[in-house]
Length: 349
Length: 180
Image 1 (cartoon, rainbow over the protein chains, first blue to last red):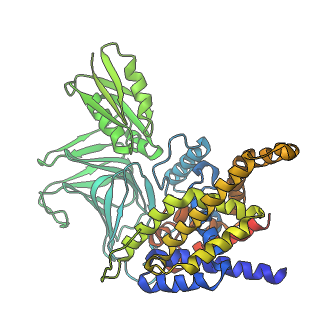
Image 2: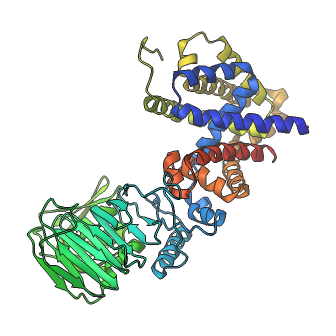
């Protein structure tokens, strides 16, 4: 019995290995696998079981599984992973799961227990190479860098990380990210966007790269904003004047070259996306739709025949739930809200 | 399914897609196969024997070139055949079998559902019994479909360790299911 169990274990292991090998293997692996199957009925049995188990696991409901972030944290208590939402959450995902994600966000904001995460191909001792990170529609993730700085990426964001001994460089190619920068005066942290360059000494700020320019919102500390002439994203030196932003301030750097500094009532609102909340205040309808659509992988809000800027709304919404906003609009007598397939279409009555 | 006598070796990516497509197609029947195997229902060994023999008999190129897809196809046919036999045997009872009829209906109908639900629960229990990193790797790689490289990045493990953990975790889940 004992021996049989041992054999079972070995065969299960071998079958599992074939599952992996076949994913990348070529003609030779397939031949070897075929030969292995022909050796024994038990081989066939174990392989079919391994395949079936994979299929069962793939079909498991996310809310019924242990939380991956928690598992990782439990396995290595000195490494705290702050990636908040790996994949677009399924509709009707459990509240528990959402709550946990919020806690992670809170831990991040508080700067609790942030430990360096090395990228897989960068062993200790090797120098940092450029690394590109992207998020898909609806995805948010956090990275803890080797220096202890944390970058949280919002949906549809692409950035490049390039650390050297002189400079910690991040190029925000598109999208939005919040930066919590570990202090290191000798090695400035520099964020570049197509229109702006932001130099930091240790602070927390949000950068949102939109077609109409770059918005920088400073939550803690001070940052310098340099407006870049077009196409010189990689150059640190710039002829444009330096603007310094203090905590609570926000700057919009337009591609045309204008820098508009303002002090919004609550600069923390710029970070609302970290909790997958959308916070609107007298915001034009078309902008609200655009924000929801940035997260939505399925439902999209479409506006038909309503002039931009003519209708404004405020409120806090769950970014994953455009339906909740549609319900608000349905109360408007002069608007028509229709579900067409996956889209919610808003038009005038 | 016939394949043109191609001269170029198939690129791995295409192969992966072909395999997962085949898998998707036959998945529901493989599910029933697994349930039967694990419950050790009487006929499960016969099923495997039949699948094995058909695989041995096959002279087709497919068996060598796409052994996985080919095996799934055979398995799904064998399982489908046996299912239709089961249905017949439940429906066709005569007066002598009336006494057994209640019992056999009772067995055949709700069992399928109960088994499906039970299996998901046992998998979840199996996941909890794994070392946490093994469970995390298995969920990321198999449930979420991330590549080993992506899993490595997410967990901080090396790519080769991820490969190792996926296999170990899968094998342990299998053994834990059997133990019940």
